[in-house]
Length: 360
Image (cartoon, rainbow, N blue to C red):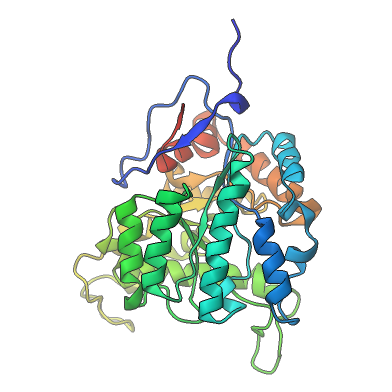
């Protein structure tokens, strides 16, 4: 009898679990072996418009010349090469809001979302699109999130760790977090720090690529801490946030955060205002990916801190050496070192629970 292969299964995105503790669902008989939860794709319409409109100084070298970022045939070949059955894709950095004024940013984001829906529609069995939602206008962000999810069928919003330097937990953004929770879709959180952000005050630009190599994990860690300490996570118990790079610094420094915010402790940090905040609990509420360049110790730390049920296989494709192939191989190889139950959970089962994927 013919057994349907994983790549033949047509998946249907149909919502997300609202209870953070209810993330597993019954697996189909022939589940996809690998679901990539965090990769990148550049819709053709957006690429052309941004390259034509952005300032000459904009850091868009990947947008201009990294073919696997925008060529669907190339992407399909890469998915097949690494036995990736389904891939969730976001637009790449830099954030649109860092390139344009607010009205232009919003128009570009709408173009991005229309283009993303069109692009993933060309490979519906293999790709799932994520909406680009710049948080420069909270009212627009709520409306565009609803349009992207309910009309375009995108899986949730991509946001960055700050909004033109403003805090990710700014009170103006509360309607956005509430809407993401109400819609039941996860939020993809990507770090942002630019080459022009010098490592030191007397340097105009970051050197050696450290803005990305170490600056991005720092920005991610600050954003996670702010969402927890400001009470955003506690106020929205149904909110699911996916963060890059294994949770960045948090699995290694969580005790430093937790010990400084023990209620009633005498310390150098102020007491938290919201009694609903539980720092150890809320820090562990995030979902993290395996884009760790094959560092098994970092993957072990992420699993130890978050639990293997909150770790998602991801490649960051097509970025990294060999047009992303080395990142993909390193992630796969590090997961293959785990025990069978952990491998199944991270490669696919956790994605089924979070994204509520089901065969048609």
